[in-house]
Amino acid sequence: GQQLNQSPQSMFIQEGEDVSMNCTSSSIFNTWLWYKQDPGEGPVLLIALYKAGELTSNGRLTAQFGITRKDSFLNISASIPSDVGIYFCAGPDAGGTSYGKLTFGQGTILTVHP
Amino acid sequence: SAVISQKPSRDICQRGTSLTIQCQVDSQVTMMFWYRQQPGQSLTLIATANQGSEATYESGFVIDKFPISRPNLTFSTLTVSNMSPEDSSIYLCSVEGTADNYGYTFGSGTRLTVV
Image 1 (spheres, helix red, strand yellow):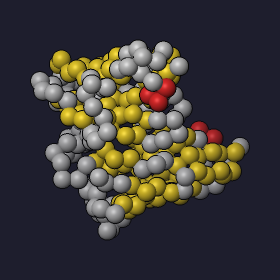
Image 2: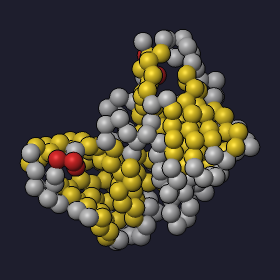
Image 3: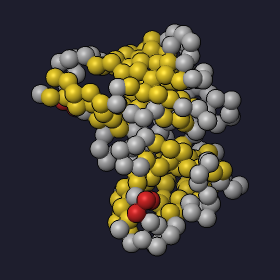
Image 4: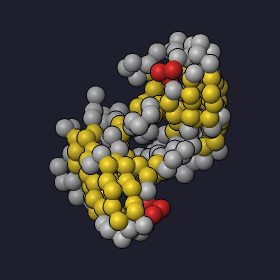
């Protein structure tokens, strides 16, 4: 099946620093999604990317859909303590008719020191 | 996007018993999805639940272990049967999206600990 390789596995940063994480795949994805999961909660969608080359922002978050359709990155600018959590990239099953069956990356654990 | 209510939020169960997790959606959806998140791991799809038909299970998951019901377009249950400590995980339901908006909404999860 499809696999997503996400890096880094974890990050420890100071408040105010910028963060960058990325996701790569050996196969093409038609959509890239970035989620954040807080402790005790389900993942919450941050950004959805639908077109190769697309660059989308959501507040301090910016994500890009790689032109090869095999990679994506997420940047967080000027990090704050509430950015702490686990960030996942995900993509829907290619070739299927389902729009909810997702493959997830391994996750990036973000820790922000005040 | 849809709002999902999932319960219980957490439970501690004895090995050999079964637990049924409920997922209620505030709108009608054709497909619902059940995921497992093992400790410190990412999310893995267990099965797709369609209303009016049997659930479709992913490789490594079987109906006898994870029976699923989908009685209507707003509700589904996942049962974790004959539990062992290895079943300790967070179980999450999710709903389908559309071509323009994948939905991508998840319930808050059920944190299961088997002792």
